Length: 313
Length: 300
Image 1 (spheres, each protein chain N blue to C red):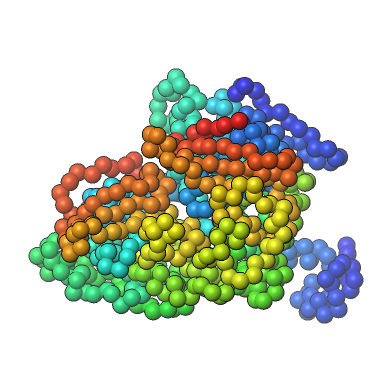
Image 2 (cartoon, helix red, strand yellow):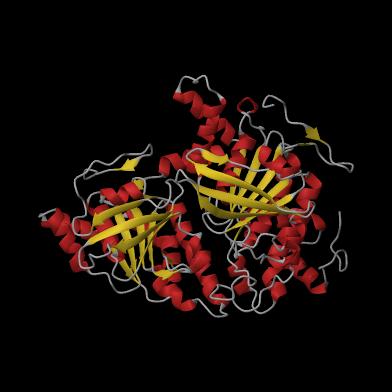
């Protein structure tokens, strides 16, 4: 049994020994035990692939966006556990698409949606308008509106605080009340991050990675579909690409570029191009109309479980 | 042949365990001369096929020998919640179906086979470089107790770069401390247990040699020792090595992934160029990403 003394190994000096002794750790064996406890508390534990697969099969859901063309592009809709990104220039309809998807999830699918608004563009009247076109029943409209929870943040630190709050208790509280939270939207993530990037600042990049990490953890741990919006920039060849740079580009699993139709600037028609996807070939394009969100068309259903219209519990 | 049992290869010095030689039958590894004990870095922009190649490797390793696999265990360390189990399973199902052409009856049986393959895979999620370091220390025990583990994959090892860089303040040594310790640990793991380590790094630094224009690189970079890895192929300007020197020292093979061209039948072709410290020159390989995994179209 090795009694801990100064100099018995590098790093152990007088103060360290005193601190250990005050906690009643006098031998090498006890120190090893402390190490074991620390490792057990802070290490991540491996999960067998088979268990992970089981868990995923039972918990992954696909949320339809309500628009058949967009659903086709996204391979049936928004997948829980992933971040989907919508990029587009100002006025291309990103917020409108977010509103439509939120309304669909709260009204058709009867699930709770958290909407983090960073630009001040969230307008309850618009949501009400959309709901009114779906159902004349006031009660249904109110119920759907209640399922959309809006949070307003205007800088990246409040965004991080908000996400961390959601992760630690907000989401659980919301699902206790009867509805389950299935979607989180951040409109837009570039509005708070792009001002922090650039120049020699390391802080901006670190914050960007932290935001990406928080969103992913929320998506995975709570089985939520995360939808974020992003601005666009032009690359070397003059083509549009999503903003926030290379480091952010790894965060979303699926990326869609939204554009107006050339020559028809005042119409509500848009094209969506798939720029990154792990399930479909890239550069698929679908057109749709912002004003007629749910046209009647048959869509194909892929093999996974799909959240469909549910009757009231 | 696919029916050969994997050859066991003893390490050079005494007291080390026998590990299955995971090169057979893995043409990908043989072609790039990857041996047990090597550390391979996959470097590339987003969407260039690094993770797909990893899924290809994983399925090859965990599949049963009858289907052309190795039946060895793999540990996958996921640092940015990137791991797509559903995608891996569809690649696995595709490969298993290919392996057994007689049409094996029921769906239950194929699910059973998938499940038994997946039991050889362990997935760990880390969300900070400290947790990565602690997890690797914990995994050392796993490696010593499980001789069938011969592949360690870290996807990706560069996820904490910016966060560490900010937390380290002004001192480069502080910024790189965690990754340096991880690199030293990985070096010990590969020497003692003869495993192959694959790690992906995201290409986020622009190579100044090609374009001094707008880039994401703040001022000075801590990786001036990139001379060792000056790529012979400068068609891509996002291949600058930026992780700490300790990591660059242990890497034996560096594979650069890029999107190449669109083939005549509208399929995106991806390319990977491999440089290694042991051989001169650059070995290239082309591949497509299909519904059920990677299809190589290799030259040379």
